[in-house]
Length: 99
Image 1 (cartoon, rainbow, N blue to C red):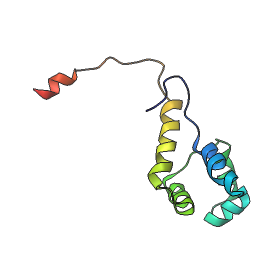
Image 2: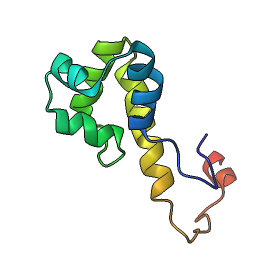
Image 3: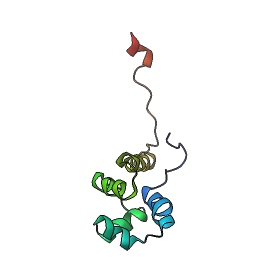
């Protein structure tokens, strides 16, 4: 469920706090291990860059998590950070679809 009053945690923070830090792995080592530029890893960790589909595969293979885990984190940050200020009334009710 998406939070209503805050932006979801960026996947880069989760990458750092829940995966790299507990393992004692620094950014340079991780970037080298998954064969991507250090700048990409650093920008993801700092929340300046999102995780692409390609990157989700590298992360999932490195940590054993599914690609969907990483994609879901990225989707949550995008949905919560871009939530419109205005709401739109429902065009039709759900019950009309049932008839």
